[in-house]
Amino acid sequence: MKLFINFSCVLMMFLSQYAMAEEHPFVPHSTRALSIKLSDDRTGIIKNVTCTVCDFKIVNITANTKAYKNGVEVDLLEAKMRAGKPALVSFNPVTREVQTIRWHEYK
Image (cartoon, rainbow, N blue to C red; front, side):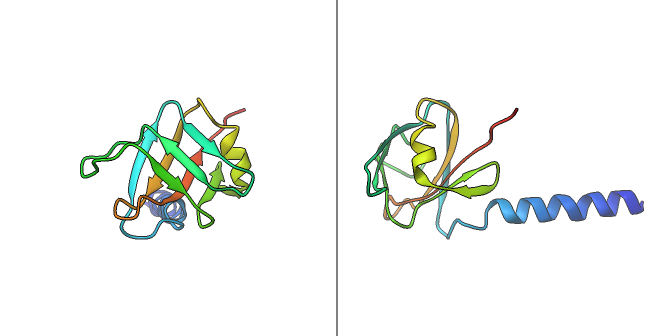
């Protein structure tokens, strides 16, 4: 029983850290091939984004957008190198602003 409680605590800590950067309201969009355009000033767009309450396909990357690789914050230019690969994009459906771009790389 103690092992189960310890495992539950660790799992809860992991899950609570996973969504810390997003602010309500946000919509997560999992993509198989990230279609990202990013300029040198770290602003840009992500194409082919869909959700059930959205009528648009493009969301905006702003100065507030964060990128996370394996749960650790990285520079947005690393997200640009992620083009064509799977990623999770969280965005505000009202403002169309991307809040986070997340992905995991396994060795």
